Image (cartoon, rainbow, N blue to C red; front, side):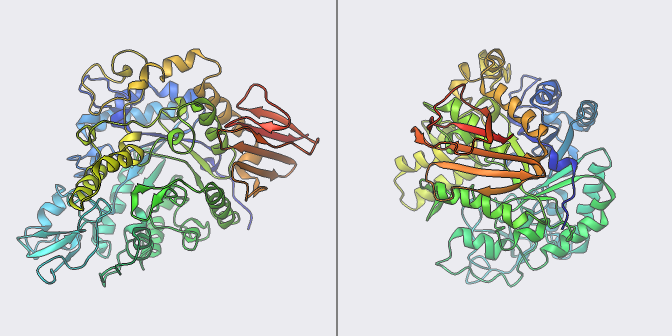
Length: 551
């Protein structure tokens, strides 16, 4: 099947977590005016799409992923008028805007749920998922992604409602055509205002298995996600309907967040002939360091497996579909802390990681702050953390008698707050993020790691990001070319070729702190890019990347 060329395949996405990006009011919370003020900076990176995390009206039990009004931008972020100005200013600069669509669940303060919970006879009751309890407890043993039961009791109806996330995020009943119609109306509302794309939050979970059977005790949480919560029987029906009723009317990009999506079922979501989504975020490489007991039981990741995941997904989508290429976002640790070395080789490994992202097939995503090499944060106490997932995991671990000193180390490594500390603009007070009291503590290293310092240094991570994004845009091969891992069993080197028409590249990365023997045996390939100024012909320096082109 001939691959179609598209603007969203050839572009690069910059993700903004707005509450941590730039505050212009002094209230400690980032806002849309702050994004507007930084558009020229974002444009200077070379990206052409900006994905903005939820900015709707919300009680913020999960930082905006619990929406109480889908058609209102929160006044805390600047309201609808500021949003419309943002869209206008972005389009003036040839930047496209991707909004978050969160429709697996609403806030429990959404008018629909407020009505639904009053009575079984209420017209909104069937907008949510209700079941009778069993043996004086919930309907089944399902657990929330954020720890604890996935069901909460409601006195007025004498039933439990389902919430795969916090109890303040009741799941919508997609079996109800009225719910689907409401969702399509919300999509139309924003696309008609000039929004260029949607990132669909946990979209793989919207179709439920209505038997609601207990989960077998021995099933790992990853298996539960794949086989019980995600990829339900009507998921493809719903996505096709969404596409035919609304999305196809617009030239927009859709990317679905896909917990539980795997190689077996993933390609169907994005196959061009299926007409569902353009891309998905799968998490095979981002759950690679989860231990037997999940995220907060981290293990050292298997580098050979890491490479294999990229190869397998590229192969699965090479003829029909398209990949999202990313190493982190607002839900995961900082990429240089997780996949690089944020101490001795922070600059080198940060540059290696962007070289990797810009030389794989698929649309690359950059998360705010990664372009200056922002790192994880280690708070001394759980009281300094804000993330509901981390706080719930802490309470669950304490209840189960865990060693809490060790558990705090796991929080340091895996908390979503690692990615949510404010953007580091300058070395001045609060890193230039706010004149007030920031909503969440800053990383103390902002004095050294900030945009202002990076702009002054022509060899900075920031300037290397700009070079690599520009480099990718120059060569269609790096967007559309075939991909082949040439050393799949090597435990330090990621070495692959990209071929497209007459263009051919060899790309190699040393994912280690050691000098590693390797020599280019093919004199027809000339080195045209590296994250080191100079290095040995016989070996790669720690965290070195090289790009060779066939001349």
